[in-house]
Structure formats: C-alpha cells, structure tokens
Image 1: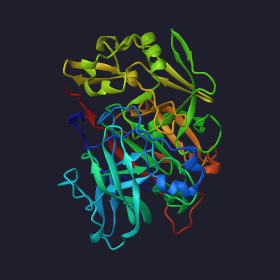
Image 2: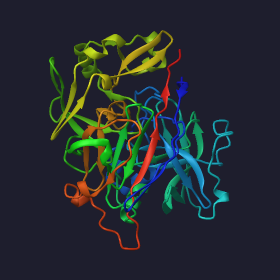
Image 3: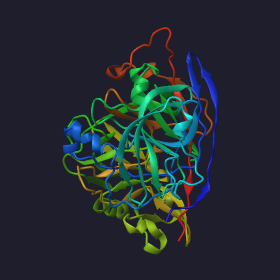
Image 4: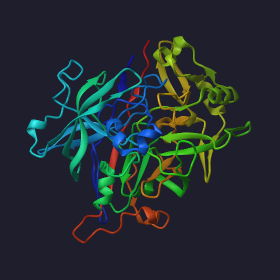
Length: 450
C-alpha cells in the first residue's frame, strides 16, 4: 500500500545575488516513481522512438512512496496554471494531470485545463501509457504548451496532457532532467541551455542535514553547499561503453568498507543510474546480501517490511549500533563516493515501532528490455554528496557536501567553467539575462503501515 505521510515542509524564497536572479520555489507533497528501461532497438530508430518515448517497463521494484521525495512548482499555459512536480533526473519526459481525466483517480485533484489557456495546442496523438511498478499508470495526449518555472518560460514545449492517472494522487506532474535519447526531441532544461537563459549547461543538487529541504541550482552550482573540488565521473551507456546515454549512468567498479574489505563488481562493473526521482538506492540482491552481512545489518522480515517485502530486500540494524557502521566507499573511475555510517541508514516507522533501515535495498532490476542497468542511486545516498550534473559534458560530479540547514546560497558558474568548457552554453547577448534558478526543495518522509 502507499505509505501515509508524517510531515512535509514548504519553502518559498526570493534572493538576488550579484548579476544573477535567484528564485526559490514552493514545494508540496510528492509521489515517487521508479526508473524505466528503453530498448536499444527503440533508440536506434527515431521512427520507433516516437511510439515508445514515454514508456517505462514494469520491473520487480515494489512501490516506494514518500521516502526522500522532492518536488517543486511548475506552471503550464497562459495564464499560468501551477502544479506540484517531481524534478527527475531518472526520466526526460514531462507530463501533467489534466481535466481530460474524468475518472475517480483524478476527481478533486489539481488538473491542467487546456481550454483555459490561450497558448495551448494539441498534437492530436495519443501518448503510450506510462506503467509504474506499483500498479499506477499515466496515459494521455501529446500536446504543446508554454511551461514556466518561476521566471523561466519555454513556449511550445512538448508534454503529455494526462487523461488517466490511475493510482496517483500526491503529485500533479513530473519534469524530466535526464539526457535526451535522440536529436529532434526537446525538454525544459535543454531549452534553457539552447536559448541561453542560463549561463551553463550544469546544474547542482543537494539535500541538507535536516532531510526536510534541499535544492537545485540550474545554470551553475551553489558554492555554499560543498567544499573542495568536484570529482567527475564519466557517463557510460548500459553495457559500459563510453557513449551517450539517456540516463545519468556510470559504472561502479567496487564497494569498500573501512576496516572490513572490498567487494569487487567485475568488469565493467555495475551500471547505476543517478536518480533524484527515486527514494531508495537499489542494487542487486546478491551484492546487497553480502554487503549488509559484512556491515552487521540483517534482512528485514516480511512482517516488518509490509508491502515493501513483495520485491525488495530491506535491511535493518539496531538503532543503537549506528555509530558502529563503518564508512562505505563507492568506487567509480576517477571518483570515490564516501558514505558515513549515519547516511547508510534512515529511521522508519513500522507496525513494530521505529527501526533503522539501510539506505541501500536489494532488488534485481529486470523488465522487458533488460538493457543492463544494475542499480539506482536515489536520494537515500544522493544526500551524502553535493552532486553536479554536466548536461553538455556528459559528466556527473560529486563533492563533499556542506549540509548545514539554512545557509545563504552562493551561486556560481565561473568556478566550474574551465572544467566544463565544452558544456557551456556560452555568454548570452547583452539583452539576455544570466540567471541561476534555485529550487528550494522539501522532503516528505513516509511511514510504513501494516
């Protein structure tokens, strides 16, 4: 079942920093999806891609609702109609619930009304159904509309006007931030870059120590949120080749545990997706069983895990033993991702009380296309770094985070300009604005009920 929410936070802010305009975004409750697969055949043929563009494959991941989940506001149409959206690096599509949905699943929920917008046009083509692993799904019509996030506005952006949102009630839209699978298709951030509305094709992401808030910075990074240098990880395709991917994915070579040893993951390693739209981190069961046995975790019983036990292995440890969890290091070519013991776990309420659960779950990602993705690194571990997403340079960066709550932002793109020169959008004309968009995100934590 879906987990009830125990709290949420909403933040709105308006700040100016030198020549940049920084805008906070109000947040609402959220709904978490899972990563999907595309077949190589679909990607190779743009004509086939059209009919499969927004399809996710059913996999063996159970529903995970509201743990480490973020969203921000997005507006459609003229005049603007505003909705709550997940900003999702695990997908590139954009959809919003619409008034075309008349079923009970949409009744009484915020919905986009195309007839109230003077800038709406329809493509007149049905979009394939998006099927999610918890049984929920989205279907709709390809359409074009003016889409805005604060002062950033992109006209005639392709999106799915959803006419069916079965099982989805706690988010209105998803805005994809992953890489594009083919030329000729565009997304919101891609248009920000190509229209030079931001100074760089880089964005940064963090979660603060409270786990109640975090943020994106589009067009640069927030220097107040990390220390030292950014370590860069080259993106790889599903089979480990150094080639463009639709995912923010890379090969994890090994995992080390201080004072215990190292688990090697073979050649080329595990291909993992870095995904702000997923709550948990999910890796193959054989690996997670071995890892947690070494770390002193035990597999959660079905009575503890409830519906999570359907297809995920969750692992628990005595909350009094958190200080004994050793530092864990995820090893990539060119970078080491350091996870302290506290970030290796989170607390969760069950029918047996509060327990401490590993941030890494065990699940074998299969699905209809089985293109080689072995795991998802979601917000449960993304919180342990400041992450930098170099859209043009096809790199993913991590830095030591500064997670103090309530820090004043220090936005910059110049400090990373040299290392990201091939990804720079260039200097805009005098009439254009140099801007960085800050999304001050709120975290919704769920509690699992029996």
